[in-house]
Length: 301
Ligand SMILES: [Zn+2]
Image (cartoon, rainbow, N blue to C red):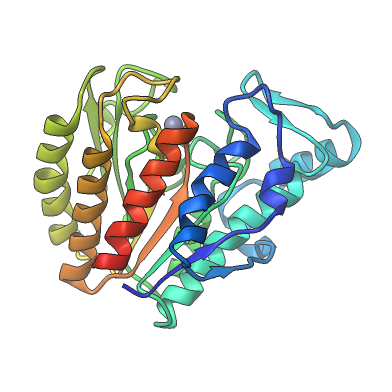
């Protein structure tokens, strides 16, 4: 597949070295990108129109003012900010917007937004769980604004993407599919929340390759076939890996490669391009290996 990565050094400046969601993560993630000589493109800031379609005006202003006037600090007990956080978050969302443009113009088949801070816990009006702006939601809104009628989001991060689910709960043009450890942080993601375009598949602590292969080759592929999306967005959180220090799943390198391959095959079947955006993943060497496996699948497909 014609594959590109979107990345900017501003993402490294949002940093707290003692926090699991720190800048080193992205350095490790980018090593295979450089070794495999994948084209790296520089993003711009998100357009305010698309950001306002996802987040409230008050919340956006709060982020901007906090970073400018009260940094460093915390938006919630988990979510730190420094004076660069706002710029990094605006560019992370902008990378997602740009990725959608590149895919819909036909220039690439797959784009990976190697961004920080991550996004899927961010709610319309608040930061949460290391996330400031909901990057994948911005990508979905961008695709809708360009005339795409059916957007499929698949979220394999070990945590449920509460923000993404809530933002699109009443938007049937966006399908949200999530596998996540359950019960677990953030507490949402029960299958009782499912409707005809929200499909949570809660995974028990200790679930590994066998359980994930069953879900991704079965219920995931069926959901994509039925919805027939014109683009697939992936909240790629690699904290489902067995080596991750924050979670309790048992997925191996091979399991991650299998999941990515199912997503790629689902897209190819419908000629739907793929936008990946980085969410979690807190064991540095596992994150690097997951990056390698992901790009190997994309380049070989
Ligand atoms: Zn996570």
